[in-house]
Image (cartoon, rainbow, N blue to C red; front, side, top):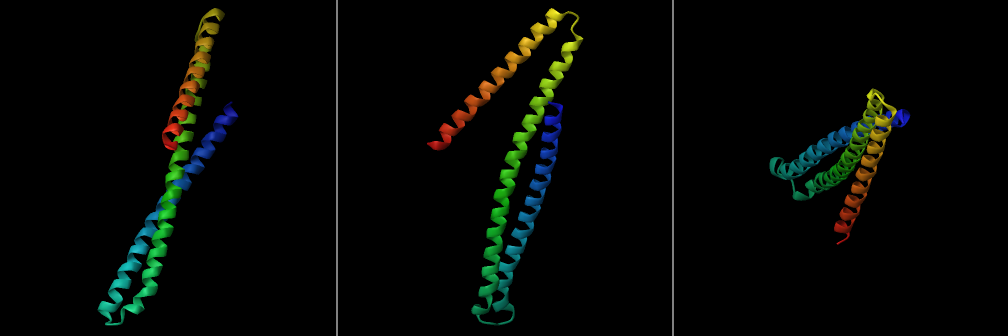
Amino acid sequence: MLINLEDIKEFYTWSQKQAKASFILAVIMCISGFGLMIVAILIPIVFRLSFQMSIIPAIGGVITELIAGTALVVYRNSLSQLNHYHKALHEDERFLSSVTLLGKFSSVEAQDDMLREIIRSEIQMNLAELQENENREAGNSK
């Protein structure tokens, strides 16, 4: 269980880096695309050229904005994964802390009772999460 917890922490760190990189890429691409579109508008005005000269920078700006939109979708999905793994880390930490505290009880009976309660709590939480996921999927399919 501790090995799994370490793996989840490592994946969480990797997902966090990926989310930051996706966001930075999206911001840079948005600024670049906007800049290309401004250049496409200013070229005919400043240099007194025909508007046909600004078609290529305008198309470049639109393509750059599309790439930025894709990067934002990747960022949103990365955040979703981060939230999922953060929740898993929190649940694992809570469970391990509960199990560790079992050793503090003075009698074996009290330890057994508390272990049953921990297991019951975990099962209830898992059932509640399954129900929540089913409700969310039913809401998304409508």
